[in-house]
Amino acid sequence: MNEFLLPEQIATAVNSIKNRTSKTPAVGLVLGSGLSGLADAIENADIIPYEEIEGWPTATVVGHGGKLVIGELEGKTVLTQQGRAHYYEGYPLKDIILAVRVMHALGIKTIIVTNAAGGINRGFTPGDLMLITDHINFPGLAGENPLRGPNDDAIGPRFVDLTETYDKELQQVARDAAKANGFTLQEGTYAFVGGPSFETPAELRFLHTIGADAVGMSTVPTVITARHAGMRVLGISSITNKAILNPVEGDEVSHEEVLETGKIIVPRLTALIRGVLAAI
Ligand code: HPA
Image 1 (cartoon, rainbow, N blue to C red):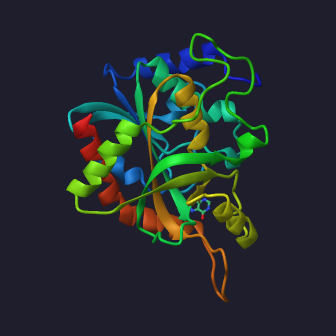
Image 2: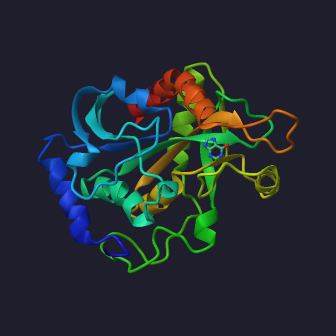
């Protein structure tokens, strides 16, 4: 087992996919917990279960689909990850970033990443969508960065600038799409934590103090890897639960709540992503 992702591993997965579809996707779409339903809107889909792609990590968590859905949405050819592998499942970061490396190798230049997140910002309500404008990479600050290891100069630079990680133009397109659909799009900073335990109230108060608006267990390794390759990134969090900073008797958060709220958000998320795809 190699500690870092090798070009051969990317090429092998790319070949598995090319053997199963003749489509040339232009946009990558990653669907988060409880958000798999969005893939049902994709037309003329070629569906590839993860088990059939050599070297691909399979998602083990309830609420994640576990297949690639490649087809058309709003006239754009999208490659959709219905379900993703998470760090907390035990996968090393090199497995988690395989998907985005493969998207890049397939010629995809724009990715839309979605996730379920806890709402730390006191102005957020479960059911809200949040445009990710910046992030805090907790495992990364402590050394677990997906780009750690040998750099492939053919893909991107050793030291990646993350001053403007989330594409400004795509952010505006998302704001416009939300407005056109008549709903409020919250905005803020997403904090990536390792999970799988939810955060303690003290940890949540800490995250609040340092400027996090939402917290979740995914997305950031993919985003950093995408930026390394020069891809444009749009990130959307669905706020599935209120982060409990100051608990009162009986307060708790559960994966079931995350999935239930996620399902309720799918129609609005679908409308938003349709609007974005139509405009880019
Ligand atoms: N914390 C971390 N990850 C999450 C949460 C949360 O409250 N909700 C959904 N994903």
